[in-house]
Image 1 (cartoon, rainbow, N blue to C red):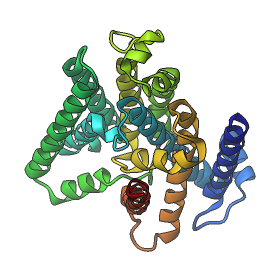
Image 2 (cartoon, rainbow, N blue to C red):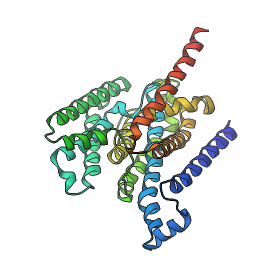
Image 3 (cartoon, helix red, strand yellow):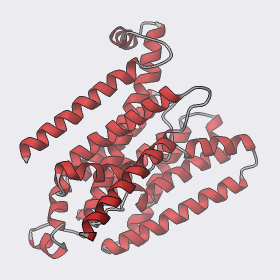
Image 4 (cartoon, helix red, strand yellow):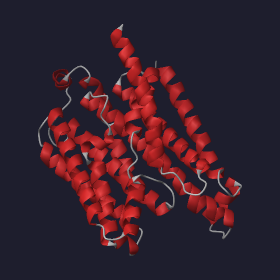
Amino acid sequence: MKNFSLLFNSVLCGVLGFLFIISLLWGESTVHSVSALTDWLMGKPSIEGVIVGKLRLPRTLLAIMVGGTLGLSGAVLQGYLRNPLADPGLLGVSGGAALGAVCVFYTGLFQISALLLPLGGLIGAGLSAVLLLGLVGQGGVLVLIVAGTALSVFTTALTALVLNLVPSPYAMFEILHWLMGSLSDRTMTDVWLALPGVCLGGAIMASCGSALDALTMGEDVAVSLGFRLGGVFGVQRRVVLGVAVAVGSCVAVSGAIGFVGLMVPHMLRPFVGYRPSRLLLPSFLMGAVLLLGADLGVRMLAHRAEIQLGVITVLLGVPVFFYRLLLYKQRTMF
């Protein structure tokens, strides 16, 4: 099984590397990626260097970061909550990040600097994470689910209120456009803004792998094996903090992109098994592959107006989820 997992992860890395190269090469203008990257890194004022270094490279890196983070977060949450329907949006942090960005639109601060938009999203995600941790306290899984659902509904309602109060149709269009999720017109500044949160949150989630395996046998067994579920450094707080930091950082720069975290673990379990720790790395890689491939599809289909990436992920994810549901019903019937 270990050899198969290594082979499977190697295949995913190979596919991701291939899509990475295609993403740098693909576009309306044909460029030589190596020389273009060299020109960009050396600071030479060439058109190819600007196209690859300032337009395509940030978009490609963000697709890998956001997709990988969503896939990893979905696997961690489904493993911790023992719920196949869990996804990063369950905790309400995504809604908090969206609310923060929408408030920046509403107040007009985004006209001062484009940097204020992702910063507003990060602040919203941070406040949501603090509020969630305060609501959960020492409560268990059920308390986390209820608190996360309540926070998600609350941030959604506040976002709808802000949309209702927006005086300008142009601002309304910009807000709705952002809420649907996209990676277009992003820069390396967005990459550097999201990178610390993605790395920190991903490391925290990865540290929970062994505890997630133990939790498949029940909380009492996990405690008897030496894993602390509650407390400051408990598994629950690490899961919440890791997901909140990583997903909040991603939503702040990409907008709301749904269904990736829910869909990826279901796609991988037939290949890597149901052990949560073995699902973490493949989920990150598969999430990155899925979102980068979807973004390439968006760019290929673009004619007059580019389809929002969040719309594509939902359209891809729902049929896969329905297929998995039909397989599950067939197994239970027989």
